[in-house]
Length: 529
Image (cartoon, rainbow, N blue to C red):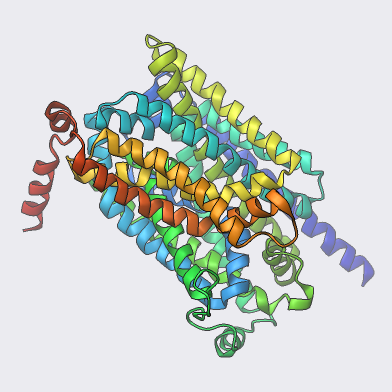
């Protein structure tokens, strides 16, 4: 009997390493096979704007959901709200994917081609006729994507360390190496093909994990779900509570708004619309991406809602440990390798998108636009590849030091970046009246508003385990979802107000940006008839 247990344990360990090895091998092969042959910016960054619906859909979805959604958000909100947390994933699929593609994809594709824009700062500068917007946009993206990326490495590295027993430094180096290799050689095309492969793992892994959790003794199919619904703490929706700011229902709405609408203005996600081939690819991508988001996003929060069936309040040691504890108890050893690869796939795809976005803003929007205006495509493309590695390295180094501020800053990154760009980008796709002054007001105002709200909430709700300025800062950052949503709403309002009272862009620029959009709309109407 003892020998059988030892053999089973060894078999599980071998299965985990074989699964991980196969995953790394496939990514390496993708990078080699799809190596960029020309040093063209469009080829490396946009795959020559020739991406089909399947690749674009999986690239969007894989960038949207990282291990943070499964382990951090899923575990935390599942513990706090029970099955009501699943609504977050469902609204992410409907509002953050389906509606986002309907509202943004085609206009982004057309205007970005009309103006030959390759990045979000480039889009703002050319759409509103102010080159200095490139610098402002680049600073926001680079400053706030680095800690975002570092915290994803840090969280995933800890899970990797726990599962495979390697030192944290080796875990981070492996993750950084995987990301850097296929980005350096293959650019966006290789990244998108890798996202497709990783997306398939995410879909299969999520469904498999849900099935094993549902049939576990702790859940026993419907019994555990019925117990969650019938408990006083959990239900279909969170309770209202007495205080608005601390109300579970209010914070549930805030999280839905942040995660469903924040994606609308994140440069690493919008980048997918620049590269998509045509309207037919958009229609296909819309459906595929929505199904993907429903399975993966909805599945992430649904699995998180089950954590209370596996961890009692007396055993609670922190939100980030809830999901790992649950899957270790519910899943057989051989399947843990698949789940780790699922979390790796979700995170590596996000990290690749963050790296490519940050590298492109520095090389295209800063270096080529201001430092060396006559830089060739070859020079800029090589710089972009090198900066991808630099960005990965800096993020990995910050992750290694496990700085608490980096982890907490990640929750601010989503809302602040979305707040800076929400108004100018989304409204700029539809209204010809949006001005450069409005774009500046949104970017500067969102940063100032974020800092101000951190201070305000910090004084009102200081972190009890600390004192002085640290307690205020930690308390303020702890309210980052509310701050992020406030920044997004502010961006939309300030963009409208300032645009009404400032000089609009030149008509020549407007005509070039919106060229063909009316015709495309009319053609679509005739086709529908």
